Image 1 (cartoon, helix red, strand yellow):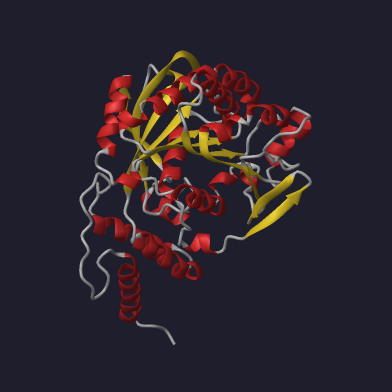
Image 2 (cartoon, rainbow, N blue to C red):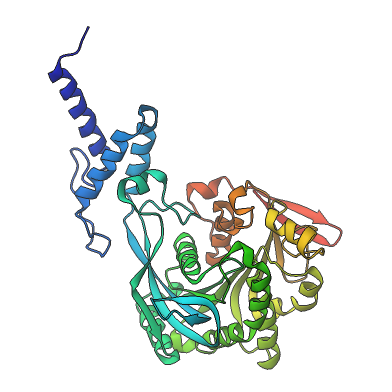
Length: 405
């Protein structure tokens, strides 16, 4: 039997109303919840929500329920912004805000703002497909109109001004040091993602050495990271030396991949020249692209200069395996056999990895982020992603380590 046109129209309107009820901030029959005004609200909130409703309606029938649920969860959050501070020995870009892949002979300081969509998911820097399709937001994005360069004095004053607004236990600085194949913009976005997912309400900062930001630039990056050691030393010494003046209680460091090479030598120099005066909080060494023998010789600095050090490795890190077996033809710290050193906790991530990134970005996996959160804050996170984490002890002839998956 054919349906009457009015009946079809009524059914469509009912479906549209149901979708809007699921995903609008007002809800059906509930009290309107007003979002606090922010730069993210460039469009009226109801209009954005109607666009999300349209995305749900356009989806295939078998996807609509799941999309509506994801949309509703996303609306419990709000689009917002993360400010990140930086140091870099890249040359400033003469044509636009930011920095190039060329080396400079000085450290530049500043800050910028990163947009974080309400659709953000733990560990990801991209938006889910439904959100991108509806709003065109491709995940975390740098807001270049809020890019600022600072003198060293103004850098200290600006951080102090931010930390003065915070509670005592929030007055921390997290410094991220990226690895190979990362440009300045990607480093800023990853820093914002880490500070968001690790609930760093203090200061998130990054040091960006002049990586080419290209897969083919591995050999060039090896030379550049070595040439950047003195500048990273200058930045870390400056942060540690001005810690009290900035009002920070602790300075934590996360170094990834090739960035660990510069960190290792910079901290050895700092400890030697300053007699261990400048101590850091927690230091996290993620997938270090460092020769195992060099690491064993120099890594004794970590227990001397930090309150705790955690080394993350993974047997599923295809990129590190390739570097160990084909490029360097020697052992790398970030890949088995497991490196055990006194005063350093070794953690092996053995969960699922993303083959598109060759399993090398696992430090942004929800399971590793849960572990990092626990180490930084001293409490076990309660999020759903962290409830499934499995920890067991592994053993080698040199000692014990932790396996997480």
